[in-house]
Length: 314
Image 1: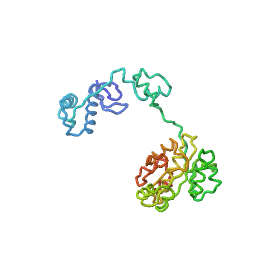
Image 2: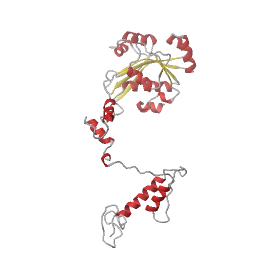
Image 3: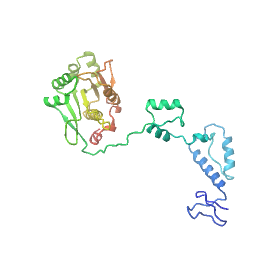
Image 4: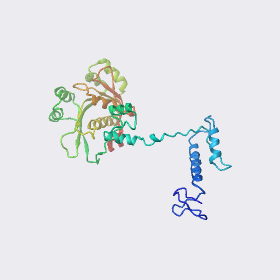
């Protein structure tokens, strides 16, 4: 009696095509399974080179058992079929992740030692599905070439090193990059910076050896970032990352290929150090308050956070 290999439906003699799915009927389901196995072997053969050098006795035996006479496969390597024990077939990373989300016991799925390691290191956690809606008016950047004293006072308010940062920005005649929300409310963050020519390096760094070394590496204008701060209350919006990326992108467009981060106040916090590292900065000279980046290397800019105008600019 003929069978449909897809629907697993038995037909009376005389039928050749399944009326439900249109598949060609076979004499038995065992024949369908044999043909499927042969097709799987043919597909797998394409992923193996012909010169692997492995023994092929098992392959030849499989071909003789599953393929019609006169047909051969191109597999030359040794095929090993692995099969899990029945009690392990239902274990998957999805089930482990679901149990972790619900704070359930996973000892019936994995070894207790592995379970403790997963919970202690925060593994198998789902990413937040609360994705913010991004549109053209969500955020805006404001470039301030000559900041007023009142604006600097507002930006540095509440900082423990406020006086040092405030006086440094005003006396150094730094420029500012502000990040604002769509409503134009108070800035979400800022970065103070300025460009240094080769003749201005010593007056800004106050170190002859350091100025000479930077002069040789920069081969032109150097970007000096003197302070940075941003609102970190929203975990879905990395304002400081956006600001730093925008400053680096603007510097690249101004033919500036070397950058420094040397704050007026205290050395950077761990979060800021992590950001500088992700942007390609390196801590030089054993000084935690001096970070350098060679922006001629493309890894200095995180294109994930670039705005569309900046991407076109770069």
